[in-house]
Length: 363
Image 1 (tube, rainbow, N blue to C red):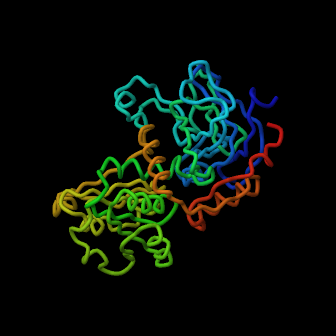
Image 2 (spheres, one colour):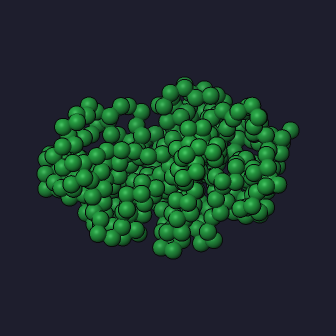
Image 3 (tube, rainbow, N blue to C red):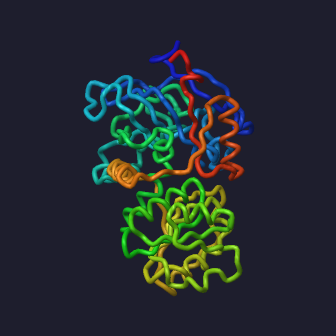
């Protein structure tokens, strides 16, 4: 049928064959008054895409089109849309709807709405069409205007794409923690999330330290703004850094392997270790006594809010921040390449799928 009745995407049909993609049509949600149809230009590749299709986070509805770091052009807007016009360049992240009525939604915490709908793999209620939400490895995406974001002119689309999830995921907790001048911030891991966190923390005015098991990432970490690079595979690495960090952001997808007590020991009094890396496996055993020596705490978060998205984009625009990305043309082979690259930690440091007009010439 084609747009606007159906969209086309590169989809995985079987989680046991998670790197095999095939292009096929799918039905989008019912178009409503506050919806926006976006012709996709490019899409970042997130670790969540891989965790979802390879069963890392459990069963997922199949067939599935992943991708929640979407940049494109608005081609249709609903009658009640006020924030976007046809022709605007916009982005969509990892959330595509919330109820707008609950306490979280009414306090700029819509990313914690208990009724939220993720950008892909989540069921829409019957009144919205009853379909499964499909993501950005596709010709188009249909999004509620509250989860559709104007992209500042100075940010290239292929760089803005990974900010829609990875960027916001690290920016939100740092903003809420008051990261800025006078704060010592530790970033654990130099990857898709971590490289954004280093760059943002430095741009926010903090003194940035990077904790990593990979010595070959020191040059990139310092280029992104790190003052010190600490190799955590060294024995007793934590001892010289006791009571040092006001805030620690763990972006690594390997916390199940951590000596959590060692990491906590480097926090200042009442400091926090905050997790945004979400591995498949459980965290190591944690005892309450681990938090007592410095009164520290540990927590986590889920993406960020609409106001935080715009603050992040403003920071990027004003400071002219440039993420480290690799562009790959979208196709069956291209999709396979990027998900395997993420799974094997081969990317430095974020993939963006591009050349959508070649892949979807008739949209």
